[in-house]
Amino acid sequence: MGLLSWIVFGTLAGWVASKITGREQGCCLNLVVGVIGAFLGGMIMQVIIDGGFSIGFNLKSFAVAVIGSVILLAIAGVATRRRF
Image 1 (cartoon, rainbow, N blue to C red):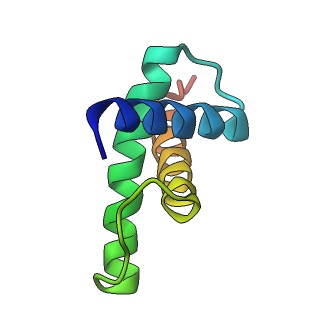
Image 2 (image 1 turned 30 degrees about the vertical axis):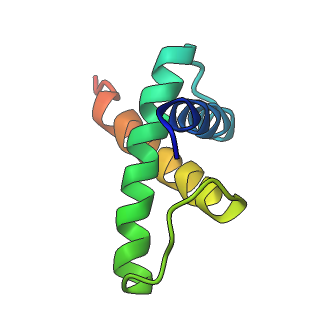
Image 3 (image 1 turned 180 degrees about the vertical axis):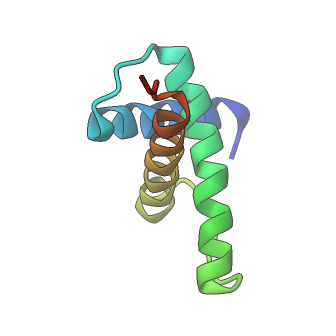
């Protein structure tokens, strides 16, 4: 996949994850969350499936990227939560 397709893929995954979690954020943060979430989701899938997961621009990879992004946003939400 080319760099531009990774940017589009990451931005879409981050945007969907932000809608699922209810965290509003800008386009640039959606991109960062989506790309890091895709990496996180891919690493989790490699452990679960034991190397049987292919990386590409398809629905399965998009779902993994969104799941990874949701996990990343959940971790960020817990880490930034203030306690009084």
